[in-house]
Image (cartoon, rainbow, N blue to C red):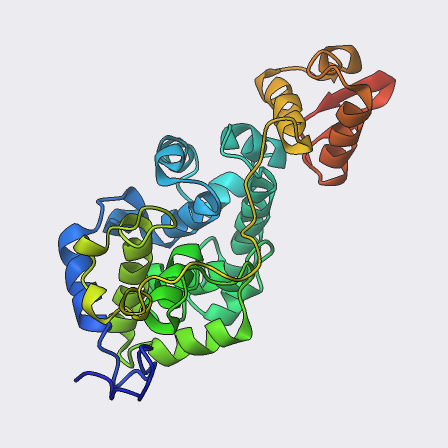
Length: 307
């Protein structure tokens, strides 16, 4: 059943019983979903959790090799928890945003201590784990356990912004209105809701992309509010860029690369060779220490954290 048409509006009525989006998007997903290791049954809840940490702000092609190595080395949370946190940072490699590695290590330790080494099924227990926010708790509960939760990543938010609200891009930060809309669009059946979460995310990743969207491949193009409105250009706040060259992030990455490759603690003189500008280099190193990613030692030596 399609949603009733409102006069002078191209938006879709976001009520679960009337949404025309679920069936075509889920059917498209059944045919076009990528075969990713964390979607396979053998991945289990831990594999799903690891993938969700790694995929934040990082494309799939960069995550795949690190994910495979990580699960081979640490197939269960307890395997990771018994290692020093610095080993998680080392294994994270060049995925970027390495604090995610520390958070995942912290979550693994809490899972081992509080839940006998099994990723909890309960959404509230997931949310109570260190390093787990609203999105990750919903994603693990939905993708690992087939539960009914609104899973709002950047891809889903873009699909809903275009298909339902008729705007090219969602706001820079998730809003209460987006959460309300996502909850209203959830199918009542748990299994269908879980498939809808995965399917709408995949649609945003493969078809309804940030640039060069493939509307001719979209299963809901005929009812997309943004397309029906003539694809009006984004008129909200400027979208945040992802600059990297010359930033503190780049310097931090270079410093961490030296420490990841080192077996023994590294002297300050070696780290000084990483970046010519001393003020920025010192600021980046101080930030790494403050974030718990680097441990300072006496006599000007540094290493990845052991505790």
